[in-house]
Length: 214
View 1 (cartoon, rainbow, N blue to C red):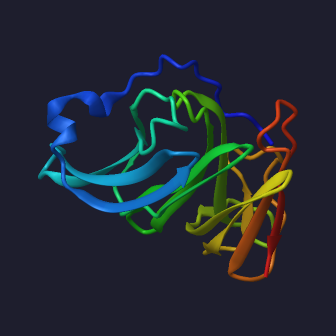
View 2: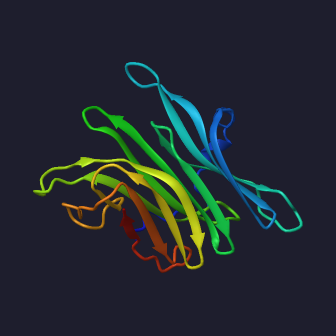
View 3: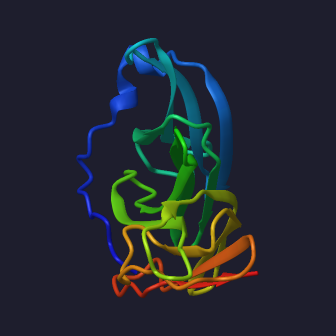
C-alpha cells in the first residue's frame, strides 16, 4: 500500500474554531473502546464559489471520554477533508487501533460524479495520523486510450485480526489505489462491487491492498 502521508500529532484541528464547531451535523457514526468514544461526522458548510455559493461538506473525527476509569485520552477534534458531494463515512476500533474511512468527490460536467475513498489509521490517544490509504475507480477503454474517472461508494469498514477490509460499490471497470501504484491503462475488472483488504494495516510494515471486484 502506498502511504499518502504520515503526519505528526500536531496536525491542525480546524474544527476547534467556534465557527466550524457550530456547523450542522448531517451524518455521524460512533464507536466505543475501553471507555473512550470516537466519532466521525459530516458537517454541512457553504463555499463562496463563483457564480453562486455551493454546499461543502467537512469530515471530522472526535474523541471523548466515557469512562475515566479506563480511558485517559484528552478529547480532541480533527478535520480530515472536505467534499462537494455528500460523503459516506465509517469508523471502527479494536485492540489493534482506530480506523476511519470516508468518500469525497465532486460533480464534473460531461463526466458525472468523481468520488474517491480515504482510509486512515489514527492514534486513539491523540488522533494523530499514522497512515492514509486511498481507492479510486476509473473507466479504462479496451484499447488503452484515454479514460475517465469513476466513483467509489463506501459501504463498510471492518477490522479483522491482522487486516482491515473496506467494501462498497463502484462505477467504471477498474479499481486501484489512489494515487495508483500501477501505470495506465489500469487492469480492467468485472463487476460493480469491491472489497479492498489491507494486510498488517496497524503495523509499521504496510502492504499493498488486495482488491477484489464482483
